[in-house]
Structure formats: C-alpha cells, structure tokens
Image (cartoon, rainbow, N blue to C red; front, side, top):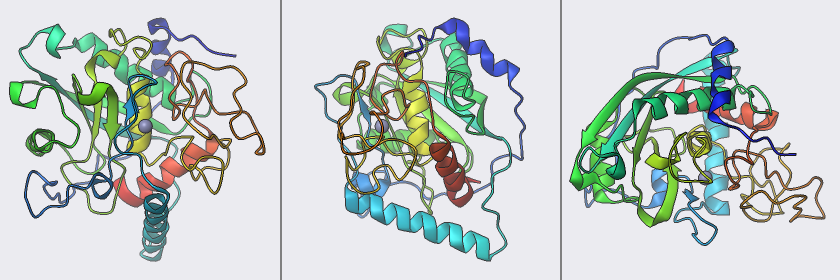
Length: 318
Ligand SMILES: [Zn+2]
C-alpha cells in the first residue's frame, strides 16, 4: 500500500515536539581536497555516498564497494568503542535537533537557473522533520531539523554543481558553515542527471562534508516524480551513515541493518510485490527512503536504520 503525500501533509512536524540538546559542537576542520594536487580526490576516500540518479537509465557515479563498506563498519565500531572507553555515551537522547544551513547556488538569480523560493526550502525542512519523525510511516528516528540560515549565492563558476569537481570542492570550502553536526545542504542544477549526493560521516571532518541536492527536487519543484522532498530525506540518510537498502545485494550484511529485507538492486517507480532476493525473508523494501523509488512511494525508515543513525551521530557528529 502506498501513501501519496502532498504538500498539505508537511505541517505534521509542527505537532511533534523537538528538543534541542545542545548546539553543534565546534570542530576543527580541514579543507577538503580543494584541488590540491597532493590531496586525495578518490570519491570513496572523500566518503561520498552513492548519489540517487534522476532516472532508471542513470547509474550512480560513486557506489561504495563491499570492501569500502567493511572498512567503514570497522571504523564505526572502533570509534564507538573508543568513545565508551573515555566516558562517552553510546545512547542517544530522545531527540537531536540538527542545525541546517541551505546554500542556494544560482547562475543568475532566476528560478530557471537555481533560485528556488524560501517557501520551497521551508517546506523541505518540514518534509525532513515529518519523515524523520515517522509522520508518513515507519519509526520516529529521533532526529529533527532546524533551518538556521538560507545562503543565496549567484555564482556561474559553481553552476551547475558538478560531482567531485574542483569547483564543487572550492564552493564547499568557501561556504560550509558550522561544526561537524551542522548539516550543510547545497542546491542547484546538478551534473550527470543526478538528484543528489552526500558524504558519509567520518572521523576527520572536512569542508567537503555535506549534502548536494537538485534544486527542483524540493517540495513544489519541477523534478516529478522526485519533487516531494525525499531526495533530501534520502541524502541526509547517507549523511547520517545509512546505505542503500540494496547495498551488498542478496548476500552478506547488505546495508548493515537487520530489519530491512535484502534487495538485489535498486527499485524504481513503485513496483508492487517486488522480491529480488526470494531466498531471503521479506519483500523488497521499496517504501524505504533509502531505495530509489518515486517520492510518492517512499515513506519509511526502520528501527534498525534509526539505531544506525544514532550510533553514527554519537561516533562522528555529536
Ligand atoms: Zn543514495
């Protein structure tokens, strides 16, 4: 059963109490690979999540390999263990409110070239809050979002935003705001027909950290069927350490979350009763935000995903 969401549902988050448990920690940042020849610009080393493509024919430029996933899992476990040894806590408070800065990149200040409205951005924050509270379905993840600032940039040199380009790195180095727990979202027209991409959390934060999304994927945008705001929900999931539901295919630990059924490959549209791993329990999790289905088809995170995001927050962003 699918849940058709419309802009009229975005007010739900306002009914849900959110508690701010401290402002984002100050962090020392290193400049992220901004065109320095000595810097590593390998996408995996930068921790970039596989982007969500804008159509079934488009493959993502940076899906992580099984060995990369294994290395990331070891780092997460090691980091949590180290935190526990120095008196840190592995338990997340009831609600974490993440400060958000949205950088609107435009070529010339027109809507056609990136200048989306404040209303779209406010509606996007509402969609994030409702999604992460379980307001469309699934669990309450314990994460909420507060729009700290909208930063409008008219800069042809940064437009469109080209994945892993020197211009993208320079843009982020110039604009990134706040500590490692501040979510920086960059919007614009994107290269390669992509809907977005994100960095995974990691021990050494840098200025490349953040989420890039197609401007017209925001609620009320033109990128139908991806214009209800779930590209941001999906990419923020990566920023909080979630993998795609189809990571690893049918075998092994998949997306490292026990309660998302195994899935062999990305699903598009909203296919009923899809089961690409018939030897494993459960139908494909096509309604999960971390698949590739239409925005109107995806409406849930699981308890396992919420726990994984909480662990990652504690390890890398708190
Ligand atoms: Zn993705």
